Each structure stands twice: as C-alpha cells, then as structure tokens.
Image 1 (tube, rainbow, N blue to C red):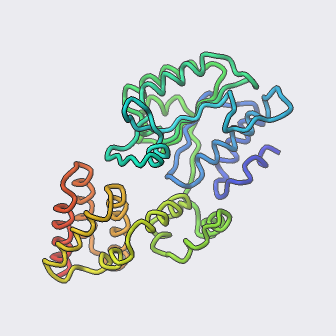
Image 2 (spheres, rainbow, N blue to C red; image 1 turned 30 degrees about the horizontal axis):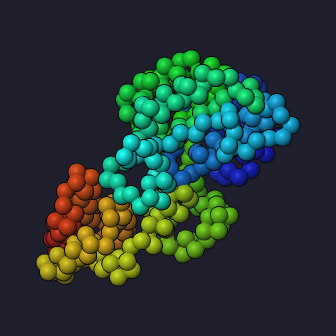
Image 3 (cartoon, rainbow, N blue to C red; image 1 turned 60 degrees about the horizontal axis):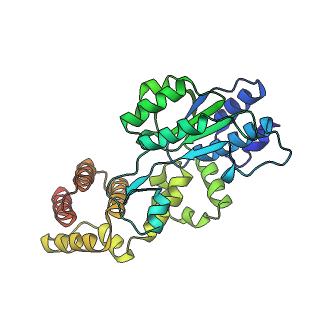
Length: 313
C-alpha cells in the first residue's frame, strides 16, 4: 500500500492521506507547499512522498537511492563565501561563522530551470524540493514563479513554516499540505525512536520545542554549547549592577551570535514559566533585535540584564 512508504513519519496523518490519495488517484499536482513549523517531519514527508512517486514511475526494477537520484534536485539555502555557495552544514564544517542567515539565491532557481529543461532519466517525472522556501529573495521567488507556471514533467515541493512567509503568487500555484505540531505521546515516540530519550529529562527543552521533535533535538544540542555555570547564573536575576556586567562579559566572551540568539529563546521560556513577567520577555525581544542589527553584544547584554534586574525589584 502507498501508506507503507510513510511508515517513518509519525503524527501527520492528514498529510499522509492527502499525498497517498494523490498518487492512488493519479492526481499528482505540479507543485506542493508543505506548511508547518520546523522539526515536525516536513522534509521526511517529502522524502517518503518522492520514494512513492518514483516507485510508481521508475523504469528500472532496481530503485535508485534518493541521495544520488538523477531525477531529484534538492535545494536548500546557502551562504556566499569567496565566490562559493555553501550550505549551512558545509559552512559549519569549514568553521565559518555567519551573522546573516543563508538564502535561496537567484542562481539556484536558474539551476532548477536548467534541471527541469531535460527529460527525466529513470522515470516519468523530475522532482525538485526547496527547503526553507521562505528564504528566497524577491528576485528568486519571481524567477521560480515562471517555472511553477510551466513545470513540464515535474513535481515541485516547497517547504515553508507558514503561508505568510512565502509570496502569495507562489502559494496560489501550489497545493497546500498542512503539518501539525505533535502531541506529547508522539513526541516521546519520535525522540525514543531517534535515540534521543535523554531529552525527555529536560522539560524546559520540551516546552521550548512545543511539539517539534526536530527542534527538541536541535535545542538540546544548543544547550550543550552553553557553559553550565553560565546557564545556572542566567536562571537567576542579577543581584546587583556589578554582577550584571560580569555576566554580560561572560556571554560576549564564550558564546557566538548564533548561541546568543538561541539563549534568548531559552531565557524567554524560562522566565515566563517561572516568573510570568511579560516585561522581561519584551526586553529579551529587544535584545534579539539589537543582536540581529549587529549591535555590540556585550553592551546589549549589559542593558538587558540591568533591565531584567529592574523589572523584578
């Protein structure tokens, strides 16, 4: 049965039904948009769906692995570095620290157009996946629009967190496949299945992940990058002006920008759960905006911690 291809995907029954029915009824759309927050199975669903599509149309009796399938192009945001495009994984391997987020670039959309200009090699259709489609600049999105209007023998899958994160003209040409956050029991099953059961011992991470096992795993890995003594200090309100300045200095010295931005999310969850003070959350949101505007981190954290101290007195 078609649903067997989706066995690895848990908690997304509506998406599974929509995709399997499309194949079984031979009503496969030229373009889909998988909508839902990060870490809940959208990319996994795309892989399962593609395997199902290729199983129905592949000419060879020996299925090709998706990782090197000639009829599949998987596109993700990239950084530009010394004339090269690097994925986030490649940038991390090279030890590059980037302040600006990665983007899906116009050159990548042109590569999609070129890929779709040739007929499929092993089956009856080409497939293109765009991860984090919300990162497309306007020029790239407009270029993709032309491809969506005439995709040829192809299926294009956009993966995005929400409908308002992608241009309406793109959405209007895609069939929407909704993905939901997982309930507690399914979260537990997914984490245990992926050998991540130790995360269940950290309720603050589970609260922060809010039904996204992928986020829970990523957040737990981020937590390991925060020195335990610093984290313990930050979960208490600074006692005085001097302590606030010392903590800000330690944050600036020991954490890069990415870790600092994640720390803001962690502290917002922690302070709200324990103190229920919206003014602290608002102050931390200002901290995030300042860091994203490349303000001097130490000064930003000094102001933040002093404001938190003031808000709790």
